[in-house]
Length: 308
Ligand SMILES: O=C(O)c1cc(=O)[nH]c(=O)n1[C@@H]1O[C@H](COP(=O)(O)O)[C@@H](O)[C@H]1O
Image (tube, rainbow, N blue to C red; front, side):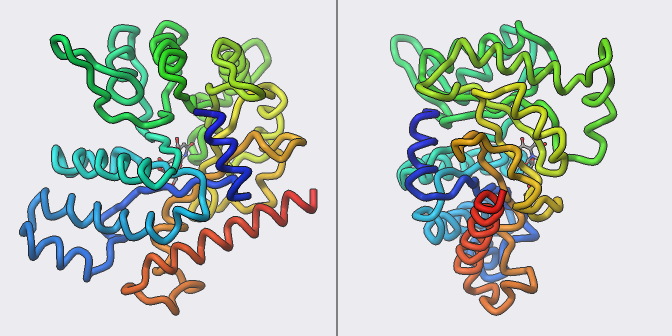
């Protein structure tokens, strides 16, 4: 799957991910109204609104981008219908040829991690049959429990040729509270980065491992160090746009080959129509506004990479 991701990045010339985080407040009135008209103001109505919103954004952007990252919390809050909308979104994006990164941030003791790995990347046995329940291409995981909590994910990745993005240094303001603590004089995130590089060696594609890392765009200096610590790991970089990250902050997340990083923007793309820069599109044309925001993001990152 890392190979497919790299091929798609090269083909689109766009090392970006559109984050499908459909909070209700971002879904235009007319989409909500139609869904509620059909299903009422119910969890089913909310799930339908989410699905219609996602579909329009995907239809308007899929030819420009390699990958999407649906964040499961935004769906889960609407219960079982919300999760069905998550699955429908995953399947539709795959039909459109996109790589799907399930942002599910799992991780537990080994036996529980194994079940999470099966749910999102692998296959579950039911009697004599096997099913791929959510079937994303990559998933995000939290490594806080250590190797025996991570190994079940690595096993499923090797079997299925799928991939992981492991939290190393997160983009949020408090991420330093634990992640920057010094352990034998070195920050914890660096030790986790080293571990990701080791786990990644067990899961190598041609040039890159299919075990990647998450490092926030909001910490560019740390990104520079972590790029060196994990040379063969793809870095998923959230924090662009709504959290303040810009193209110029991102150049050190990339390797010399121009690969090695993929930058996520969620609100900056899916809620573009609410921003002044794209207000001319109006809520009716929110998909077109997202397309314009994708084009601007790609230009910003390409320019920064060309100038480095
Ligand atoms: O794993 C992630 O994707 C993630 C890690 C991190 O450190 N920071 C972070 O913002 N994210 C996710 O990336 C997305 C960022 O959304 P925007 O700030 O709207 O672009 C959300 O889905 C977050 O859950």
